[in-house]
Length: 398
Image (tube, rainbow, N blue to C red; front, top):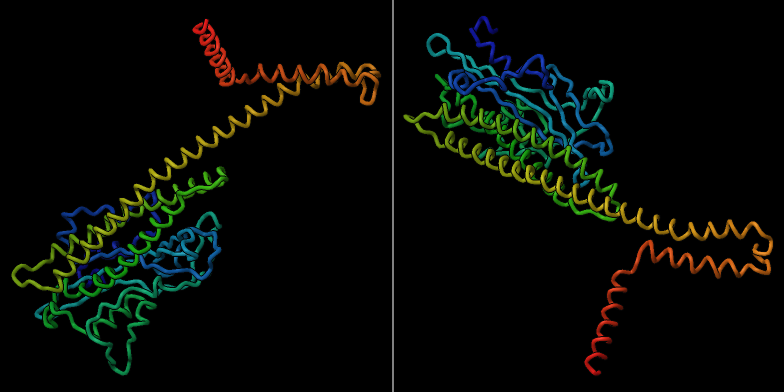
């Protein structure tokens, strides 16, 4: 097909990209410069669909969704009793002009989300079944007209988000044709309009997950008496926040590429309100991601500072415990020494006639050693001050 239509191989490479980053190769979207994006005659979209998994106690954090084009799936820690997953998705749109008014539109998109995954390396790459549901019931249905029945098939907006993008595109195209679309000679932006709208709706759910994550880690910075457990929890949160930092950078790069495409295809001679709204929507999404990213970035320093405070508090507690043990050792060493001396004679054994001598010697000695080990400096200062005041008063009276 690529040879027949003379298609740029970059179009296929932008969709068929690797699920995980490797040192041996790089994803085309990560090495594409804005100058190349401006010249290309296709749209490449990378986004995430958000799901909630039914299995709440799963220990897996990263999976690969099994399909013709494997996609990465990341399972976030439990938030408000839910296990939320971010599943990588892609969509590429191309328009090829033919002779006369002929044209061909090619859309590469992902199938509906299945429940079959492959575990990561830590779990032996084993097949895994995880049932899931759309987050918040799916993305918003932005159609302005009610669902229509086409060729005997009724498309229910309430169930569109449970399906793949192909079903969603059929749903929207059968309801309403974009104002910028002309059947005789459509433009690339006209064919890309609904994929962009669908992806924008998915990004809104992504921002909602970011907001929940910020709230979760803000609440978790308060700590109780179990310092070791709280320190481990903060270390875990720090690793999660660092993961969000990398994720936000990747998300911002995807949004910048999409916004560049929209801006490059603005027709100043024939302005379109629908296309201008798309620019506004994606600018809003980019701002939301940036704001939540800054809050998550700020939480990294907060968690780091809190962990340092807990570590310092634990060090002080350990120092106090060592001091107490030292005092106990200093106090009880004389007692044990005197006891070992008196135990040599039967008269000083417990119950013997001279057993009282042990207390008469050991108790005063322990008291003296305790004063030497931890002298009451403040008490002595107060006593010296009172004695000095009384002497001064006597001198004045004399």
